[in-house]
Image 1 (cartoon, rainbow, N blue to C red):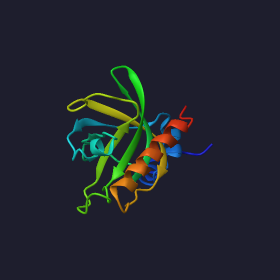
Image 2 (cartoon, rainbow, N blue to C red; image 1 turned 90 degrees about the vertical axis):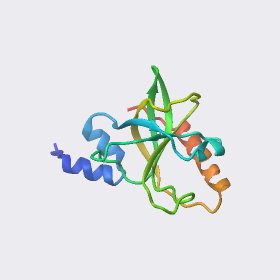
Image 3 (cartoon, rainbow, N blue to C red; image 1 turned 120 degrees about the vertical axis):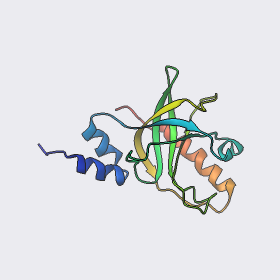
Amino acid sequence: GNSISSTSIRLALKAGDMANANNWLGAPYLLTGPVVHGDALGRELGFPTANLSIEEHKLVPADGVYAARTNVNGKHYLAGLSIGSKPTISEEGKRTIEAVLIDFEGDLYGQTLSLECLRYLRPQEKYPTLDALKAAIANDVFVIKSLDLSL
């Protein structure tokens, strides 16, 4: 019974409100781009990431950690999606989009990846140590695996 506008969808995305944005869109919001090289810290922490290069005009949801889903070579994978400036490891404030594909092994460099943004989990945080960051990522993966992400 309510009207839905592109403005309300943009505002929901900018607030990380994936439940409303996806409901209003009728499908999960997609972030699509080529996988590019990052700083390889995720691999060192035991959580290799796929770093996406997104077109400048694309609206990217609010900074934070999200539950996401992707398809690689016909197989679906859950993913932990991080959007933000990586405050634990970088002071430069450059916004990045990177995903940990859960239970995926392989090389995605140069491939185009589409991530369905399913659910906002938590805000981005600065951790005192890399071990604390690693523990937070492990917890995010655990939480994502336990969620009912059916749409």
